[in-house]
Image 1 (cartoon, rainbow, N blue to C red):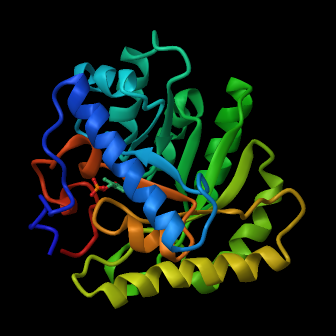
Image 2 (image 1 turned 180 degrees about the vertical axis):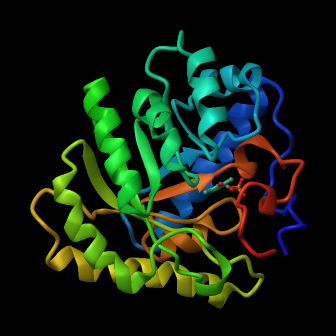
Image 3 (image 1 turned 120 degrees about the horizontal axis):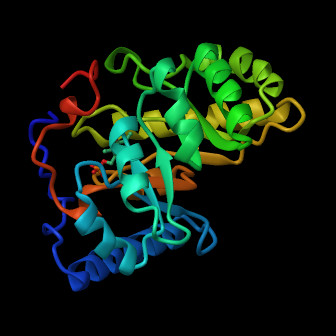
Length: 259
Ligand SMILES: *Cc1c(COP(=O)(O)O)cnc(C)c1O
């Protein structure tokens, strides 16, 4: 499925400032329409442009076009970009892919947000490194809503117990849940991943520990963000619809993901 990567949802390969402005405006318009159709307030969904594989020179144009918070899937690539773009005031990075514990130090140093928290060893490593840097980090707990498809993310049934442990990590500011939906042309199967995440969040929110925020739902990508908005997404992670098609299939970026 994911071999067919340049989905119809991918934009033209953006090269110039005008390309980036046009792609960004088009995605923002689609988000606004989806909010409206879902009867949700305008501006209730944050667009996180996902810039993996996009080199720094093109990212400077993306920033000039108005993107100031970029999602990256791989820690080392993100760290390199954060360093090479450190002269841009206010530019922030969100790490949205799996994190090996031994790379927690990089995330603690440069990232503003981490969306793939799914085990306590990660939380422990991040807490220690954030203390050393005297920083805090916004985090999303990643949930596996596609059962057989992904090897990352907590099982929905294990999420409550995990979240109950998180108040011990005071450098981690828990904002909500994140998921990757199943790769399928079957809209109803994709939708059911989004519904699973929303219903889980609604249940967990009822007795979330003190200080644990569960307002945010990060779900939806270029191919399915409108559906995710219908089902309650507050953050959509959109790469190809903003930057253009990537050369490699998604299985390259998500080892262990079927397809
Ligand atoms: C690459 C990526 C996205 C964005 O995918 P597109 O198809 O480019 O919109 C979203 N979430 C994660 C975790 C990713 O790695």
